[in-house]
Length: 417
Image 1 (spheres, rainbow, N blue to C red):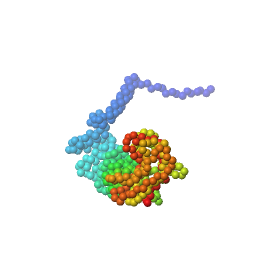
Image 2: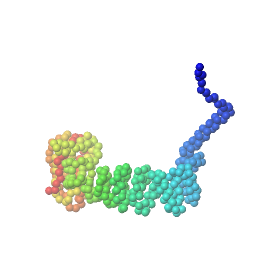
Image 3: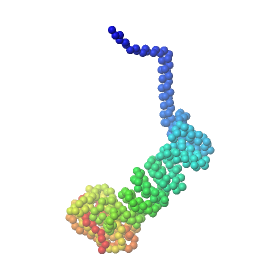
Image 4: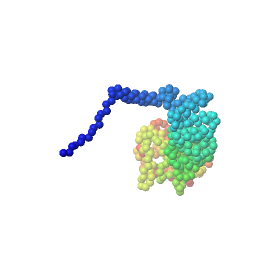
């Protein structure tokens, strides 16, 4: 008979009640210490911006608060530079990757005349946090001062990608419009950085030297990718509003597709996509009316639907650059249940001090089937280098702006006689 062996079970270890009580007390003490540490740190974080001095009293490891206290000391007591340095170094011991502490040490080194150390510390801070504005702006100033164009452009790119773009933008316009930074900036724009839609338009708006701005834009137009439609529209509008029509016209010509001829009335038959640019058709936003294009027997038609209400309509226009001479403007027009006290017409006038009207077509109103219209006019030799063609409702009183119905135009042509 075989004897079966039962595996031995380990006997339970008995702990004395005193030892168990001590372990529990130690465990709860550890939890309490951990909780107090977390509370102290959280409270320090909470006060780090509101009261940095109190923050580091509560939690001495609050490196950013310690930097804030040291920065304030540097401003209020410049002679206490040793204490400022000690505070910055203590902040670095608590947080070795603190850009604020590094930039503070750099500023104290600069104050003591150690420019090399300041540069090394600022460079280190910029590498720790690529978008740290203090170090990047300091280094950008050095690059601009020493003419390091490529390095300056890299920093402008970095700063423009972050929240510090609003700080940098006001100072950039006068810098980037002059050489050698202008060409480098154009090169950077051609990479289509993510900040381009906002900050290039901001530069176009801030620029005071419009002549320098035209050079920048010409360089941007010289190669692909050139300016966007929005950038071109903004730029041309700035030039025309400033009376720089020659420069605006040249920039517009450069924007045309190869082989496209600038006829006296460009895009007369609406054969090209509408770009809403000066020297092309400009359709301005308008209430109580809708401007649209359609095709009728292979001809492109411009129609305006008036929805009822008062409209001082002059929202379809075209800037012209006609040489002195005799011209004829003509086309076909139709009105459908167009109800107004007077009616609509085309008018051509000089741009400038006199704003002399050169021609106006007959008013159209009511229900009129397709008919031909035309007007002859003379562009004078002086004070009329540029002209404006506008479809308008020549109302002279508020009642005359009440309009409803549709008017359409096709086969427009402007030619020299």
